[in-house]
Length: 229
Image (cartoon, rainbow, N blue to C red):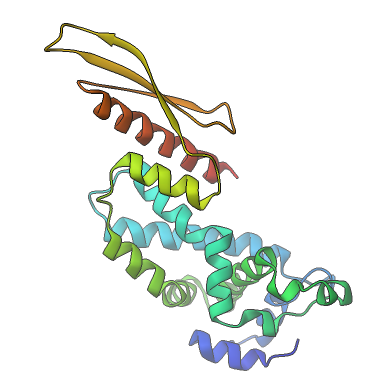
């Protein structure tokens, strides 16, 4: 471990009673049998709850699907790795020789897992309140950006942005059925993704409204798939 773990603790605004917990949180399995994998398991669940609670408080009018999508955007691997880099976490990692040679200190998965393990280490050191404080401190800027961005974008725009971020093909919309008279038409539309069998449907008095509903359903479907993983 090239960096001083005490310096990292200072950056987190937390002093460990048991410094060994922080050392373990920074230890990859390639370096030791006493590594951060079990801590990462706890930290993942802890982080999900704290961020869910923070979003629930900030967006009292948001429904479950929207809250899930916001949480997923904050705690996904890429987001965690970015926060870990902001802390220069790679400098403090304990890696085996092979991981050091292959640049493991900069790998997204290793950085994200180590950050979650640190949150668990704080929790095991002094409890939930301290872990919550550290998590909210680390996530202060991302949570503020979410607060400023709000949830005003329409479902089709949000779906397009999400798929672009995931480097997946953009959705396609197709009219399945049009019923009613010229003045009271009802459109049934499907939303499909070219790289999977996922499909959702929406209905509305205009094609645009039906497409928005189908996009909202697709966002919920993708969020559910993220939670299951």
